[in-house]
Length: 374
Ligand code: GAF
Image (cartoon, rainbow, N blue to C red; front, side):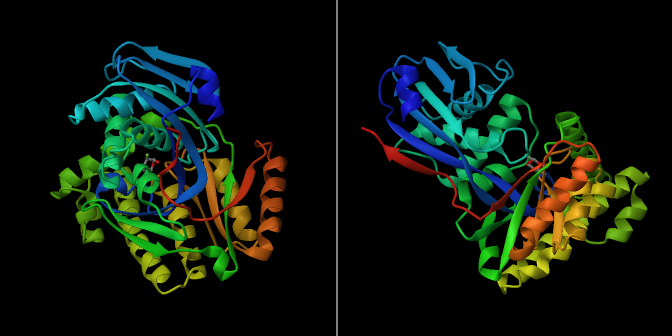
């Protein structure tokens, strides 16, 4: 890998790759012990690395000039910027009892940054694999370690969806994950084989309030579960009864989103299992409405993209990922995808929003080693 050689003056021991993701459906359900259905993107982070026996860490990136050097493994909360993610990966490994060591690491990638496509989870997963070399932990365990790195080192209280998608996804499939048990099912999902395009619209809307608002949503859900006497909102079986028992309208809306979203995931999975790909469209749109109105994580640029895609004939469209900006997915008949993109571009221009970017995506494979150089 050229970047590594240029940065460090020798060839890396190996190169690993971990993909970003979009989530088909099941948003803000993972930290409620619920269901998610992400797919891995063809876009990924690559990590070229070589272990060092002096304990030193040297991180370089093809996407920024900011280098990171340390003589010892830093403590949680002490690293800022992109280097917090690889440092967090190494911290999570050490904390899990794996013998640590130094590392020369060069990362690069093709996941648009800041678009809500999980470039940070991919960076952590790629680093974990690169640091473990020939003896990686099981994929599920790697996803857990990656979540720990983000939760306890970086300080982002995310669930485990993004890391699981990056580690476990399979080409041509969506990953149906029961987050409580971490039992995964690979559900066939190949839109192109059904004459469909899964279009991703990066609205380029600036992320607003992301971390604080995400943490606040999570706290509200945990508090609601406590009030309802269940261990997580996943366990709510009587939605009207639960809503009647909650003290305020905002909490009721948050709970309604989570409970109805879990049901939508199960419906979508049932349809995909029997090859009814286009029939999931209305579920995607219902998910968006719930995220917009009940969970309140959408923004005007995203709503405009969803509404316009639907008006231009998309079978379903929704915000994907944590929200507060970022990307929309739209399921569109292949022949209409360009017209749909043109319509969204025109509406965004009209309203003075940033010009969105579009790409058609295919469900891709999870993380892997790319090559061994010596
Ligand atoms: C972000 C988080 F990292 C995920 O764990 C998940 O909660 C998602 O937002 C919302 O579904 O991507």
